[in-house]
Length: 191
Image (tube, rainbow, N blue to C red; front, side):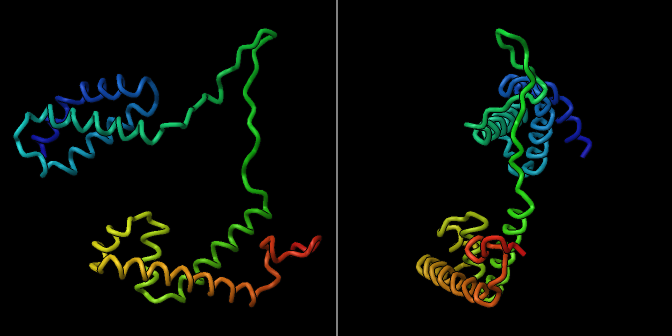
């Protein structure tokens, strides 16, 4: 552990500067630098000695920055405190409140509860396949590996699970016609 700490301390400044140059100045430079060292620590067993430790950790730093840039791609950020300069003076940025209204929040909560309740009615195999695909974002091939199930079976389970989930949600809606969902509300009767 002491040897690892010493190696990390030796390379701390250069990793910070790689991140700084790649990402630009900002609060997150320290966070990304820490992430580099966490990745190095977690993957220390993968360091094979074919290159120097410095080359290895710098590669981790570059890859971490590339990953972060991919996450941010298309997401332009602005300082909320920065003023806009116009010909007739400076203005503070103002943003509309995009938070859900109480009614929207209640509807979202009801929909989420419907899905959770309906999922409980599925067989464990169907539920697992559907959750891995639709909620965790795994590919069919990855699900096949994870569950050690043939690819065709995975596809079949997901298809059947979607059909059954829809049926279960429809049953729930028939049982509770007075919910807040837009298709169930009568005009003026929200509760």
